[in-house]
Amino acid sequence: MYKNYRPNNLKEALDWMAEHKLIPVAGGTDLMIRARNWQGASRAMKGDVIYIQHLDELRFITETETDYHIGAGVTQAQFCQCDMLPDYAREVVGQMATPAIRNAATIGGNIANAASVADLLPLLYAADAKIVLRSRDSRRVLPIQSFEIGKYKTARRADELIFEVILPKLEIRRTLYKKMGQRRASILSKVSFMALEAEDGTRIAIGAVNDTVVRSKELEKRINEGGGVKSVLDGYKALLHGSDDKRSTKRYRERVVINLLMKWMEEKR
Amino acid sequence: MSEYQFVLNGEKRFIDCELSRRLLDVIRIDEGLTGTKEGCQEGECGACLVFIDDEIFNSCLVPMSNVVGKSVVTIEAYAKTEEYQRIERAFLEAGAVQCGYCTPGMVMAVSSLLRSGKPLDEDAVRMGLSGNLCRCTGYQTIFEAVCSLKESGGQDV
Ligand SMILES: Cc1cc2nc3c(=O)[nH]c(=O)nc-3n(C[C@H](O)[C@H](O)[C@H](O)COP(=O)(O)OP(=O)(O)OC[C@H]3O[C@@H](n4cnc5c(N)ncnc54)[C@H](O)[C@@H]3O)c2cc1C
Ligand code: FES
Ligand code: FES
Image (tube, rainbow over all chains, first blue to last red; front, side, top):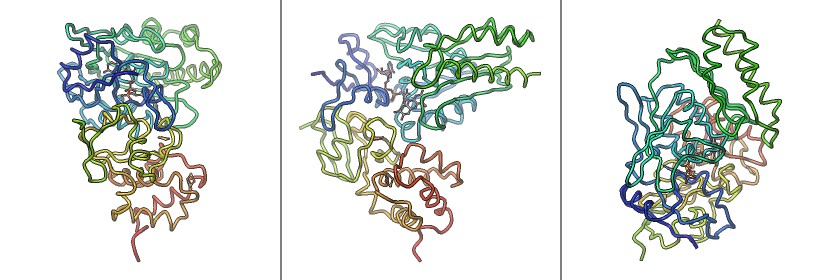
């Protein structure tokens, strides 16, 4: 049988996590499914758990001159409703899941879960977001690329919680976001494509194809310099490793990515 | 007795079960309130929707820890409100109920849409109900019922 810990505040949570190996539970929209069991039966958690959804210290959205700071406990619904945050980011979150799931699901949970289909990740990659991790004795700031190290794998140590996401303020001139799935709502993405044009040019992040999000500064540079379309498309094709799975086929995904890249580059001209 | 409490349909309750227990199991099994339905057990179908502090949640995914200090309202209590009765009449007028399994959850999603203040156009209604599956109606009559609420649908004559 596992133990259930419910801390009174963040300090208590981090103290307990320093002393015991605990699985954080936020909104539960990934974890409660993974722990599913018969009606009425105890949930099949894989170890002792610590509940963090009620911690107000993880629920904040603030800004500085250069960045937005979004607490890990902010729900998708709160993110969408926050006028301070930029439209391109709210649009991505507004297309995730369903209204009821968005009331429970947190930003931190999507990032920590590190699913290859997590729809927040292409946005965070394109924006060069950073993840702030806290433990009782440390605070670490990692670029999103260094945090997401594989499918369901992150650089989080067992004693750490994601504390916040730092989303840089960009001067956005143009965006193209496309979430392709079997239907429009509540669906795992076949492709989750984010293109931004910021003050320093194009940024492209492609999710749900490889184990982690695809982003290539070299190819972006080629696009910015007006390099040949074919060489750009071939460059991206070489980066897509996904295989056929129950969500889609490799061929379909490649086609979608190529079409979106062409649309993006045509609009630029 | 447990240090944790929540409010269920206006009445205070102590949480004596495991904190990982699903709110859905507490409602249906421990409290015997069977108006809230269980469909998919994985957040997809919306049959298990309840209000927590006036917002809709899939109770099949909510561990009891996440309702400590909160107010939960199930369809049994919501059915006594005027807003519910208006939605019910609109559903009846449009023939939006067949087996009825999805209906409690559907009605709660409609309520949440009404409260959001969004104009009830086709797109908003479809997005608002995107987390509720119905195996019988084909949805069209449900959309009609909801759209009728923006006129006089569901008002008593
Ligand atoms: C019907 C349905 C539709 C969905 N649709 C989408 C979709 O369109 N796009 C999408 O990307 N996802 C989708 N999801 C998945 C899920 O809702 C999201 O990944 C969500 O953001 C998870 O957040 P949570 O708070 O519920 O996480 P939880 O389930 O509580 O936790 C998920 C993981 O993160 C860890 N964790 C949570 N918070 C922290 C923290 N602060 N620090 C460290 N670790 C932490 C947990 O230990 C766990 O491993 C959907 C889920 C459902 C049920
Ligand atoms: S039973 Fe909860 S969403 Fe289907
Ligand atoms: S009326 Fe039967 S599931 Fe909707």
